[in-house]
Structure formats: C-alpha cells, structure tokens
Length: 267
Image 1 (cartoon, rainbow, N blue to C red):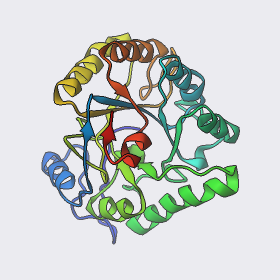
Image 2: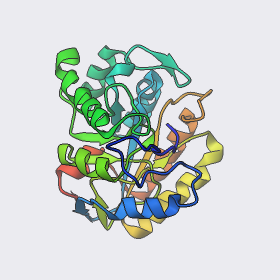
Image 3: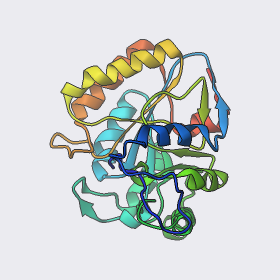
C-alpha cells in the first residue's frame, strides 16, 4: 500500500534492492526502469486513463465500481485471494462472492499474489511461488479466471523479479509514479496514487492534463473508497470529481487489460 521497496541480503534477491530512504534510491529506480523491459509501443489516438483498486476493500466495489459505472467506465481490481473475508485499516475486504460481481459488471479481475506478500520480506523463489498460487487458486476457490495482469504488493520488486515475474504475466504494475508512453514497459507499468479527499483533486487533474499533452497512458490506483478513507484510500467525492473532469476532456478511460491485450492500439 505504501512505497516501500525490497531490502535484503537473502540469497536470491537482487543486490540492487535498497530501502526507501537510501540515497541511492533514485539511481536504483532509474536502473530498474531501464533493465528488463518488455516494450509496448502505444498507438493511441487520444489520452488513456485507467483506474485500479488494490487488495481490494469492499468499498472499492460498492462505491468505487459504482462511481466508475455511472461515468460509463470500468476499472481493474488487483486481488490477493488470501485477503478474502479479512478486515484491516482499509476496512472490510472483499468476499469471494464479490469477485463474481466484479466480472459480471465488466470490470477486470487481476492478481496481486495470494497472501499479499511483499518482495522485501521473502526470497525471490517464495515470492514467485506466491504469485503463481495467486493465479492458480482462482479456479479452485472461485471458478473464475483472472487476467494475466499483476500488481506488486506495496510496489516492491527488484531486477530479478521484474524479469522473472514478467515472463509469466502479460503486464506487471508497480507504484513508481509517472506516465506510460510513448512506449510503456509491460514489466513495470507506472502508476500514481489517488489518495485523500477533494483537496487532492488539483494534483490529480494536473496529472490528467500532463497525460493529455503527452498523449500517454495514466494509471491511478487507490484502495478503499469511503468518506472516512484510510491513508491509502480516497473519498467518493474525489473519485467522482476526477471522473467528471476526465469525461469532459474526451480522454479514453480503459481497464489495464484493454490496453495490454490490444497491444497498445486504442481508438
């Protein structure tokens, strides 16, 4: 949920994994963005904006999905099945039956490991195993098939994982901020937090405007959507206001899978 990055000397982890406050972090980020890319040239006629809900709290469905649908849009729900039926600072998380609603209402069901495990806390091999557990358990526990789009819990990854997990997925999303394009990296899509209330609208709108000038692909992510949101969520009012602004600009609002599976070709 936050922007903490892997840091360990355990065997199998990248030697280029630094803690959040390390002075080499900007260098590490630059290297991670440059190495192990899976390029996706974007061929979009208009700017693209995607909305993602991580983990996901039930309010992401009851409020977030509803607000998107009212704007004629759909989102991507990155789901760690091991969190089903639990409660934490984000509020009550999804129930298994909620997953059926996600797909029936036209949203994307993507994966987020099984146990919402951080790459900073386990070896690379254990992390990869949990990624695959998160995929394989869907059919057994829900009867559903998620897309091959993935998001790293807490944004944690490293050079080896970027390449190894990228081989198994059609896209992997981190939480490095910025725009995707004119060539996106399917192994580490950039994404921007949408946290807070109406006070955060100005910054979010500025990103939308920047994306329009670049004719790029902007991904927002959040967690809970409720008036008394957590530090990692937003209010319904913020999401509504941002969607209202985007809709007036004629930007394309699309799920992550829509861009990836169309190989970047968007009308």
